Amino acid sequence: MSATEVIAEIKALSEVERDRVFRLLIADQTLREDLEDSLTLNSRRGEPSRPLADVLNDLGIKP
Image (cartoon, rainbow, N blue to C red; front, side, top):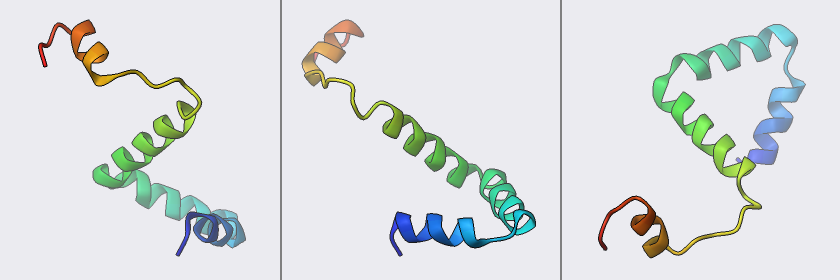
């Protein structure tokens, strides 16, 4: 099932059912972390990329 299909299925649920689904997702630490990672990735999608060597240098880590 694609993400678009999942979203459509969730939108089709009643408010009570949607609330239950979200509570179950939030209650599971692994799923919650995955959702947070996905939201962060999506919000930063338009940012320019940086070479790994530059990031490591900024952190004081020698490659």
